[in-house]
Length: 182
Image: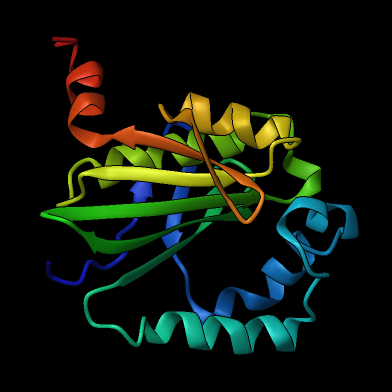
């Protein structure tokens, strides 16, 4: 598997922009609401801490077989950042699996932004050499479960660190999206 690189992704209302260190200050404000961290853990980062983290992330995975793909979510009409989506693509058997996650700042929640961004990400991953998409979601996080479902993932019976594993076969998804459900 060759290393993938994040590319710009456009949806109806959003631009998913490859993460840059320069996004840290605005993203620190987006992610500053402490209740936002209930399910994702930790506490809000300062702009300096987020800048440091973004420097590590944008340097890429130390494992050349693993791609770290990170985007900020920009609401086109409002010209502001509202969250992030990410995918870690790793070899698995004879293909690759993308583990995805998303977070949208509290002021932008409830507007379908996470679902639209996650769907845009899954559509993009479907055009990459990726066989499956997975997400791990806290069983009480209904909003994130709704985002996963909107992006085509379905819950499994598997748990990882107390979170429920959601799964999508990319080939099946592409056939569904193209109208060939066979």
